[in-house]
Image 1 (cartoon, rainbow, N blue to C red):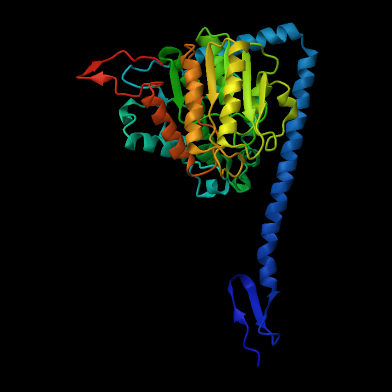
Image 2 (cartoon, rainbow, N blue to C red):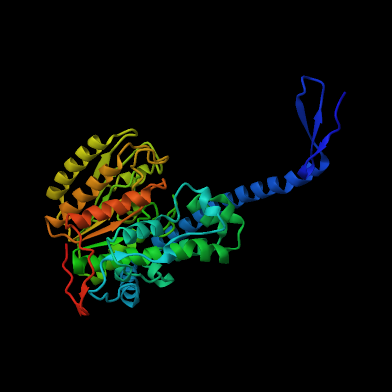
Amino acid sequence: MEPEANELPKGLVLVFTNMKNSVMPIWTESTRNLITPVVVLVITFAATVKLSQSLYRYSRRRARNRSETMSPASSSGNDADVRRSRVRSSKLYFDIPNSKVPLIYSSAYDISFLGIEKLHPFDSAKWGRICGFLLVDNVVDKNCIVEPREASKNDLLVVHSEAYLNSLKKSANVAMIIEVPPVAVFPNCLVQQKVLYPFLNQVGGTVLAAKLAKERGWAINIGGGFHHCSGEKGGGFCVYADISLCIHFAFELLNISRVMIIDLDAHQGNGHETDFANDSRVYILDMYNPGIYPFDYEARRYIDQKVEVASGTTTNEYLRKLDEALEVAVHSFDPELIVYNAGTDILDGDPLGQLKVSPDGITNRDEKVFSFARNRNIPIVMLTSGGYMKSSARVIANSITNLSKKSLIDTVDRVIGGVELKHQGA
């Protein structure tokens, strides 16, 4: 005898048959009424993405055509003057008292967006957790941490085009860049507040870090490292080109003319590579897994020192290749500033990096890079960049602790008995 159909939510009715008590779902009219809006939403999102891509390509063609009609010399000169004016009017550089240490962080770094941020493998609370570990471990006092300022539109225009910044006013474009599709359906004002505002604060931290590094010998932004973003295009959870901005500010305001980027994130840093293509002032050492995103073969042409590490590379092999790379770099370029992109997605178990480097391997890696800079008296900026496991925050905090113990950085309170001490550089 057949039991009565069980009534379930959303119009799904299960009808029991005599075929070994199996259950066959029957989609009722009310179920179809529910599914239809979802299908329409998905199709609308896909169409919006396609349209935004077409508009982006169209804007690039228009910009290229306009530039071709202008005198190259006058255009270049005008661009340089405008950039210089924007940098000099910026408020991202400001004086930091010696009681502070060059560890940069703001609670505004962390992203919390109704739980939607959890749809991306990146731990969007990583930055706050790193800082929390450093405080608990007494590596640094809360009052000694430097809080940066938010980057303004005028600051961003030093590198980014007006067209690119305008494209971020469409939630669908932001959704594509941060790889979280549901963001596309939210009002852009909410996206600006919940997603872009935290990134703007991290950009301010990266830019300020160069000034602090020049003054103190080192600086760590507990954030930043958005190395997939160039002046014209974002991607891979990178909305703003903080590395490129940091370097252009340093060129203009710090009397620096030679910068080395050491990019040790598992992914290729195609953003800064595009921005500094054929720029002899910037030397790029990029050690990355060629078998993962972004597969930007054009940008790879602009890497000065390419070190490819295949999926499955273990700690010892990775560190051996790094030693060899640094040995080559020291004879290839004489930088006045190092920007170190210290992604932890090389960790064993990271779902995107696909390498097999241990937590101790991360600590050794960072120590090698800071020693490389310290032994040559080169100011160094460290950015935390990628890392897609919850354990990354603890690993980064442990590495910074090790740098402090090895006296490669100085994180002690610089105020004793009310007297401000002169901070020692690295």
